[in-house]
Image (cartoon, rainbow, N blue to C red):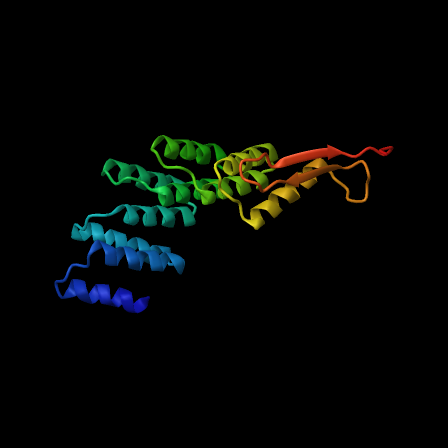
Length: 207
């Protein structure tokens, strides 16, 4: 990674302007290494050189701000992206939704989901998973299961980890005790298009 940064520096010093794709690649790699400030410097240098940002450029910069917990800046970049006619894609929206979800700002996360649908971009498994896990973590199990059902109805399959986490939360909410015969059994039905929650009460005097 350091060699890539040195190469960019040499190119600039010798009068060669790095293209936007090279800069995007370097910035993305820096993000993966959590070297966020260096990644931002790559973008600032692009602006100074007059290099036109692509949707990938904006999305990477949004990701940096989200990783740093600066959602206000992330949203400003998002607005600038739209202002410059660079259409946000599924990755852009998921990045912002994840940022808000991790901060517990679920209203903003859900509004972004609504906005992406209005823009003709369908939420994917990642979109739903982030929202489901965040709602579950906040104890909003009804909202989490509603999202799960919606995802299933769209033909999207949740990961086994998502199933396990939601099942655990549901079990705690129901106060189920595996050793008690009158427990409420909550089971997840992973079949596409089906409701995920099936409840059956077992009475003490059942035949």
